[in-house]
Image (tube, rainbow, N blue to C red; front, side, top):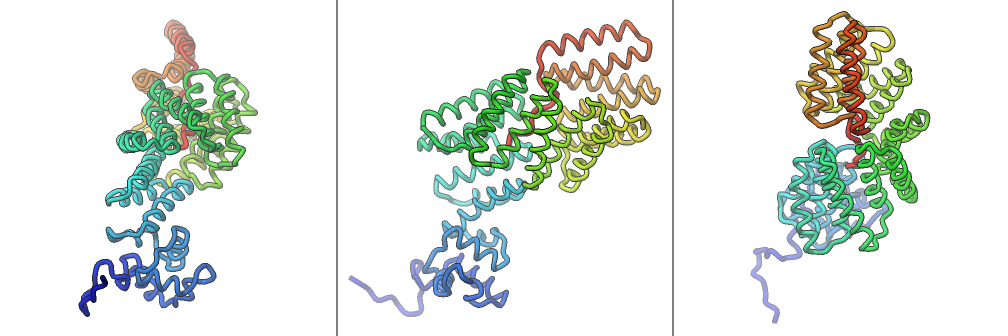
Length: 453
């Protein structure tokens, strides 16, 4: 039986009571002095927009995106109250995912942190956790991403959400990869691929990403031939759908593997392809990484002028976004390039800058790179004690992170310095150590950045 409501008192479920979303839409429209028709345009009717403002209709995610654009409001504007519509929440998730593609992981992390601070449907919450973890990985924060993924995996396993589980397993592999735990990373990547196959999923992009990550493990294990084959399989999967971020990361890995086998022309070709894609995507950190890789290849080929230009461009872009981890690598690369082209004074100024940047970096690989180059520069300037001190510092850090190839590279440079100083006995000893370290593994001096985290 229907009952009559008392006049003058609104009920919580009263359709005439505007929702928080409706109130915000109306307020923004009125502040801009726009009519219903101006906001609706040709995409939906004025009547529908009026119903949204009155709380009688819920816009789809795409419609809300259009409204937000025309009202010149960020997505955050629609997330101010606990009673957000499903469309507003979905839009926040979509915006964060787009931010990742645009190279804005900090923005994505901020959106997802706000979203996860409120009650959410289980499915939406798990997807938001995945997006948050990816944003953290892209910012080099695997320790932060790990507990987020662990919680999401537990929920997804109970729900048997195969597609989501494959993505979560793959990202957990990336966590361990960035933490330099290749065995654990391989187990997670294998779990991801096994689930993908057993669930008969058809997602070429996801498949390509997993294959690319497994190829990375071949690379860091010093198996360039196997890595090249695996990268080519990943490229074949990614090119079916032309997923640009995945393809660019795979190109980077393939370039480094080709470099390990001495195929510099092909390596540079693939590195350039990856660089063009990351520039299109405006992913500043990844373009910096590609410039670093290409610059190192050019230095090895004796093309110091070209290398220094690439290092300099990458460093300039990274300074704009306040990067702390990759920047020391690029500045050290600039110093080594200057040294190779016969300008030790400029090399000295640059390597001093690289050493200073280490005070704000946490990556031990950056310390090895900066001190190795500093050792070379100090030797070129006749500063024997300083050269030895820098080489010994680089060796100590290289040994602490269990990277035999990096150890071999620093030891070899130190051996050449000792040989030039006339210390034949110590030079021979260090050449021997470099040879033994090089035989231990062909692992690269730096972990791949192409985990498209």
